[in-house]
Length: 296
Image (cartoon, rainbow, N blue to C red; front, top):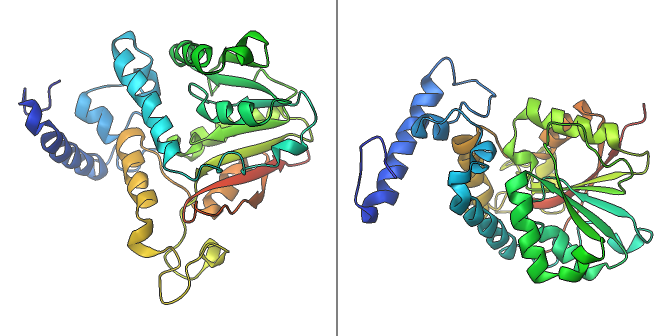
């Protein structure tokens, strides 16, 4: 792979790419045409590589098969550093009637659904993502839980986030680490498609980062706020979410959100934030959100 400086020895690649990407970030922010842009293709990553495609579309190219598979493993690895009970405790899944449909929206290869399907055999799952991801996901499930696929209890569907949602009888729309990849306008479009397909009883379960405030105000004054004299957001001990915020700006021109940010984007798309689920060990920023349709 080549950077803007040309071909470099692999042992220097990490430091060189970090420096050059950091410089490109400064260029993007100071450029009047991109500094305030919400477009996903106006990210430092796009300018640095000279790519005029959103990151997720770039992943779909046949030449990026290895990168795509590495990304799937990275998602699994990130899940492993979270509390083991996070997905299971995100919603009272056991209360759902038999054969209730859970739609794992942009669910990748289905790691979150795999956890749920094993723990709750009474539920059915539809895992949606792009064609190449779906193909890889089927391979993984045939190895990890073949009976779920052969029985039809779990199946994959190729689906574009920005196209109308095909599943119209979902009890749950599950979105795990999806919305933080998209700026306000794009996130609203995605959520509107889900709202159009929702029944009055459908619940939207979002597993995503909720950035707490460093000051004692707003959503920082909730059950997860640190006790004095610590900052309400736990200070440097809780820095990962803020670092991810900068990373998202760099690679997809998106952001992490505070609770009010989630309330605004959900309401704009016809959803009402009902509650944030506080889970021990997930303190700080990775928490489940429940949203319900706003009556029309």
